[in-house]
Image 1 (cartoon, rainbow, N blue to C red):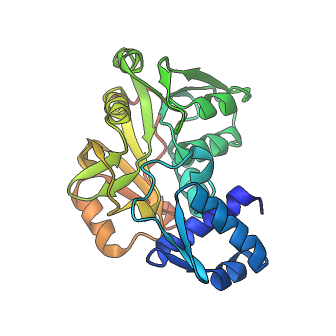
Image 2: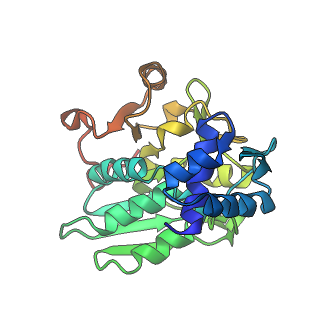
Length: 274
């Protein structure tokens, strides 16, 4: 396991354990020596993510507003793959799709690039990594929207992005979120990304929210949509029954990735426009 992967696991463990971790716990979890754990904790402390103390560390009182894309993609990898596979099963083999930025949609792009079939799909994206990945796919035409690229998320934002989206109409849009609160909606970190996500929803016939269960009831800064704006919400099987019921009360179909495949909505056909 590379250092960046260990760092992601350490931060995830700290969040799950009330903000505290011990060297012994991490050594057993990561299957590394205490010296390696202490080096990792030191690296995370220098970045302001943890504060070391005797025998372990605690999360800083003020968590980083946004963590880098490369770090976010390492935690909850199995759950992210399950959600991605369920989303790709919904997408048409031919037609047009909008893909948001973020680690979830990057995983969806990976799953899409491995999907068999002879159809040709146009994927329009706000994500620089997604566009680079799909550009190598022989049956996908990848189009990166114009705009300013944010360093943290590697997403394009700004008036140029919003203007181009206002001129589009696609079969489906797949969006991620930094937090989802049933009854209130889906949230992201900064207003300029929220504005782009709003325009993506306006441009799509079928709207999919793809998000890990750990993002539910997790606050973020800027709301970009209420859940009734989505046709389908796809998450993983860790979502508890009470939260699932609240999501469905908001209106969208809910898919728990890996459960009840027969109950999933059918694949979105080409030309399914609002």
